Image (cartoon, rainbow, N blue to C red):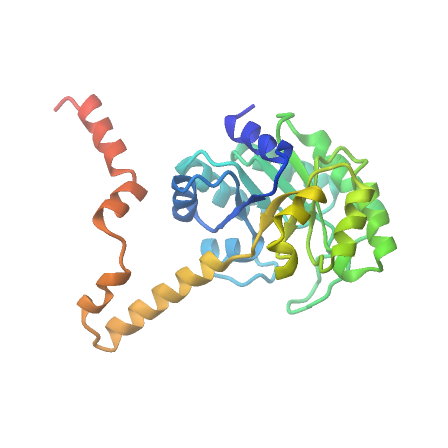
Amino acid sequence: MSLARENFRGVLAQPGCTLAANIFDPLSARIAHMLEYQVCVLSGSVGKVANLGVPDLVLSNMSDVVDHCRRITRMVDVSLMVDAEDGFGNAVNVVRTVREMESAGVSAIEIEDNFVPKRFNVSDPGLISKEEQVGKLEAAVAARTDPTTVIVARTAALGLCPLDEAIDRIAAYSQTGAEAIMLTGASSREQFEAVHRATQLPICVLSPPPDIRNDGAFLAANGVKILMLGNPTFAVAVKAIHDSLEHLKNGGPLEDLAPDQATPDLLRSVNRTGEFVGLQEKYLRS
């Protein structure tokens, strides 16, 4: 058991909806922790580019993601939910994925029902069969060595299937032992209401339309416990790095960047200077 996993379960049990921090590396996770976000989420798309410098075209493997998660949880004790994609293979591969991610300190593991395409740049690869996904989720639940690890059944069915078919999938996923449902591609209030009727599990949702994401009462009333807004922080960080380097390369004065730079106090707080100076003072003998 871990405090981070217990805290994640506490978020799922709360009556309202919690905004997650979509982070992409140990530094962003540290800042989210300082700002007292209760949940951090590492998505596959930004995880790939932040960790490996590659696009979201199935160019990373399970070990890449596990290593990334381990560096995040080693930096700060956050309740981390990670996009484990399709589990990196069949149901047997999912067993190893869950055990490796548990060992890396992850609190919640998403297993999605998207079909992994054989070619890059496939915009709509479709979904694996309901039966195959049920087997993967059951394997994920059975593979846990810590019962407080949360297995999240992630589905894109609402954006790719008729509503009745999507609801049938969600109802089946809810019987596997998974303890949360994550929705991608949800676009209407009718869909949210139908999902809430179909499952008693807490719901997580990624990037719903503005009229829904800004209606906290509606989300809470329909069982949504965690709201994710995509990865705007990553995009802002990329632009800031690009623009500052471009400014300097083009001969712009360093002084122009001063208003956009973190203060020395903030930098020391982020990198935990005081904590490590304290360790030096306590333990160094010469």
